[in-house]
Image (cartoon, rainbow, N blue to C red; front, side):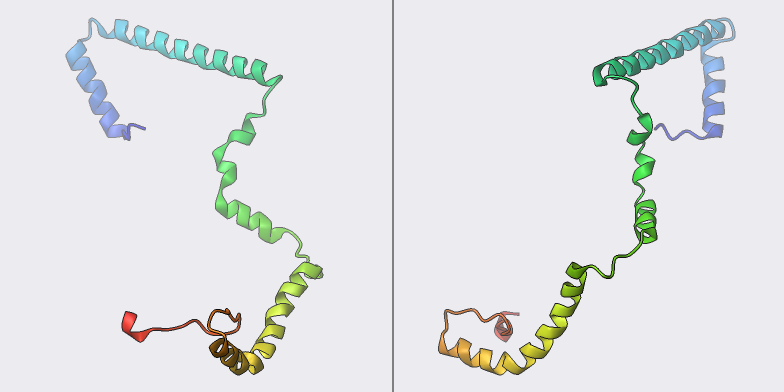
Length: 134
């Protein structure tokens, strides 16, 4: 959060000793210890309030953001057994191969039908290209 490394922390500590002085330093350390205890008590109280509101002990592991690592999700998905015999997948794979053979023979006929009826869209016809627009 503050992006402080070890050396910077040592320098801050030395500056605190110099600025605060050795006489008042124990008072500040005691005050800091009290603040840390208060924050810990508030966090514990908040956790208890959440447990009461949600009814019972909450499983906090489900809120851990590390469980949503994309690499882990993909790894688990690849480890699951593959259902190649599924009729939905078989029809999706077979459909383009069947359409490719049928579309090759009808593309000339589709172009003729499109020129005969200008308002009708033909699914196998290529998109119009205007070389002057680019």
